[in-house]
Length: 505
Ligand SMILES: Cc1cc2nc3c(=O)[nH]c(=O)nc-3n(C[C@H](O)[C@H](O)[C@H](O)COP(=O)(O)OP(=O)(O)OC[C@H]3O[C@@H](n4cnc5c(N)ncnc54)[C@H](O)[C@@H]3O)c2cc1C
Image (tube, rainbow, N blue to C red; front, side, top):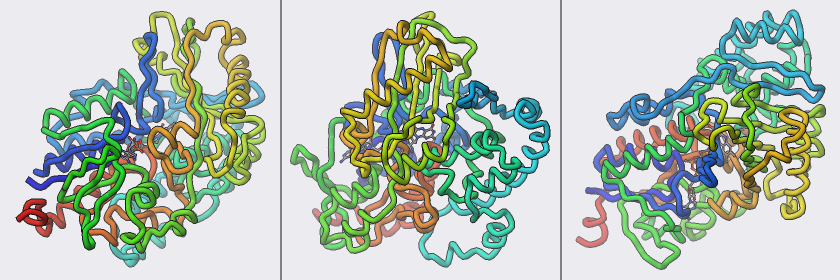
């Protein structure tokens, strides 16, 4: 059996391991941390079980496809509940609206802001659907040559849908420049680490995916999916080694021949797949003489996504009036985003994502308690913020907002608390510049063909899976990335030389 080493057990790394093992490879996953999952991880303490990273599950089909590919049905193994409304949007002036996936309810809700909003909404959703269809043409494939990007039909659709325009401006124009509605329908690009003021209108496709395809929650939390993937991997014969940090990818001639662990152990393989951050992999795990394409200089000049500060709170009260998912937008949204993306400083008035999974699954906290997850996007570590000083300041600002939105007495009811800072992603999972959602941002020249490919051009037998390669950031995208990797390896399968023939015989 041909041997594959997967460096990293993020969701994409695990999805790749399952697919490759199913294809007949002998797969070993090497994970730096004590617990698998990467950015999608969990803290279990004092009766609370909180997802540390992703909480918003859209495009469920991408998850289902991974399971189908190995002969399993994810819906038989995990109990998914649809969330509708998807989010409650809180504005700085004390008002809020609920963003329903049910269009009739959503239209009714928007009338609170503008009586003409329903008509504008239907036009916006129609146009976003076209962008979604177009966007999937770009992300749902492997690339080898730039010519594959020059699809005449797609070019025409790009112009017809004005997907090349600025996201915030275009969304605002659909909603008669109403700032509240523009915020509610443009923030989604933040999930890719991109400011809506600096993103392509193409990314309305994420808003469409949210609204039209629905949002889901696996009972037990997102980490339930990681646990299930790990269980399946074990049953299928994948070896998972945790606390196994890779120090170097070994290259002989032009070929990856295995890896060396931090412990000094050397393991040989036919293929090496890195699920660790791609710029980190090139820069830290591959000696410079083996990589002409991704030099240190080029890696340094790439654009990196934002980071985040998260507060996890266990509270000894239920809040049944809350929604499972919510967003709070500060008044000066532009100043907030420019602080993060342009000036790389702490925003004066942070906007944030507020998640209360105990609304859907009370078992995630002791009886009668709530679990709150407050994620404020923050600059990545290129910004040189001193997080020992900044973290208490940001925490204070977030608690002050929670007093207004959730409970004026919330501080007295906090019985358990943890936080996560940009420096933690750097230290824990080798995230370059402490980026949260993924390492490379999704500007035009770091998307589809232009995003680093899933096969190294300099080193044979070295592949990538996860958010650093195409299609990019987010759980559904890393599942898609695992499929594209498997398809690529399958196409090349016959040319793979086994370890035995290559190095010993
Ligand atoms: C706070 C937060 C909120 C998010 N919210 C959402 C959301 O709501 N919805 C959504 O879809 N997505 C969300 N995302 C993004 C999503 O979680 C990621 O894009 C996705 O999980 C990345 O998966 P991956 O397969 O690329 O691997 P990663 O999760 O990036 O994991 C990489 C793994 O490689 C390991 N590794 C690194 N270096 C080494 C080494 N030298 N040796 C061995 N192992 C190594 C790391 O320890 C890690 O386990 C969020 C992310 C964060 C952090």
